[in-house]
Length: 526
Ligand SMILES: NC(=O)C1=CN([C@@H]2O[C@H](COP(=O)(O)OP(=O)(O)OC[C@H]3O[C@@H](n4cnc5c(N)ncnc54)[C@H](O)[C@@H]3O)[C@@H](O)[C@H]2O)C=CC1
Ligand SMILES: O=C(O)C(=O)COP(=O)(O)O
Image: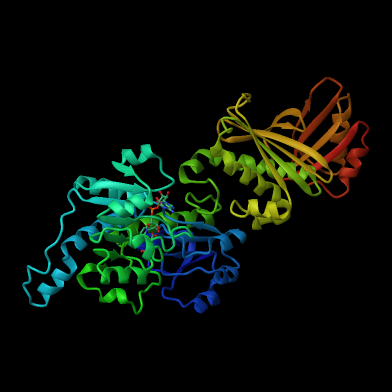
């Protein structure tokens, strides 16, 4: 039975799902060395932001197939290291969107009305109505940096509160921003005009220290900054200095450069700063959502199924996966088949996406074809995550072409592998949307479903050849399940595709090519 380690607190709903397919150990608060010590036993690791999954941990996770982040940000996972080892990294892109957006909105209002400090003051026995005079958000400018899932929800609620919305997001169109009621502006203008600035971007090299002494200097002296995204996007000492010196109005922070927050001057800035311990996703609802979302993906991967929100499989989002799922198996089967027909070392793989597959969304099919191609060399070590890297490291050139006009089938896939022993090609399509059929081998039209053991011959189309091959296979006790010949012209060259019940015994291929008229024979295990 597979083993899953849960190293951060997650909702029981997730544990229940994992327990259907695996032994689940919940061990929270492990030190890095303790995690390294035990991770080698586990097939899957489920985390939140509390566990830092470093390259060292990934190297020690010799059985790891998947790392599941029960939340959005995967900046605490060395994703490139996981990718190199073929470990799938999944997250829950939407499970805590509302929770994080509502936390940011709560921060905006709390900061404006000094709620945390006013509350503490009353609880101390005071009744101070002067110190805590606040500001209204109505008609104020809210600058949203990052208009993704969380930023968009913040926008729609803030709009309802009568705020004017400015947004900066270089990856969002003006139309989309306008739909959200936001005016898309450049960052400088946003810094200059905003009364509130709320950050909803990932931490990347570009966004690290985005809020620094220089950018703080551009802001209004009354500006309030809210960070419920990631620590490190704000230079904390520059922020503390700006608040102390009255260069900005205040800040509300849920996330910090280093968590848990240690000794910090941020703690001593009074009512102009609100600090929460990374609570953005901490609602009952969000925790159930993310635990179920990620546990289901870990369960699926353990069962050999694809994960819907893998962050390290290019182009494979949940909606696209749903659409492409049946074709992924087709691509993989064809890759495996053409690789075996080519034998030797493959130097170039051409993937032609035909008919309805000729869209940009079909990129994962190229990865699936590579996975199939590399299966003979790497077996279970190749997967959707590392197939492209493995191909690149082996010097396999991948050419992707599209032909929307191919209309034989709704969508079909043509693969051509050129290697040290020559060039071979296969084409396949789905019948009835599900059943894989080979429709062409080396340019000869056929129509057979692939089977585990197959034999292909290239021969001259002439009387008696099928009988001779059948007798030869019979003499080796090989049972033929089905057989089909593909030819272009009568008595010209032809291809025979045979499904056989067992692997071909050693030495029989040489005997087959001695049959007069048979030029080549290839055995394939799928
Ligand atoms: N405090 C908490 O507990 C939580 C924090 N988060 C964090 O919130 C952030 C946003 O999450 P989502 O909205 O779900 O992500 P998302 O991917 O839907 O949106 C992020 C947006 O940022 C934009 N962006 C990327 N680089 C940018 C840049 N250099 N400048 C401006 N915009 C840029 C993207 O185009 C995208 O629209 C993430 O960092 C996530 O980790 C998410 C959930 C809970
Ligand atoms: O989902 C995210 O990105 C978060 O920051 C939430 O973090 P958490 O799961 O609460 O440790």
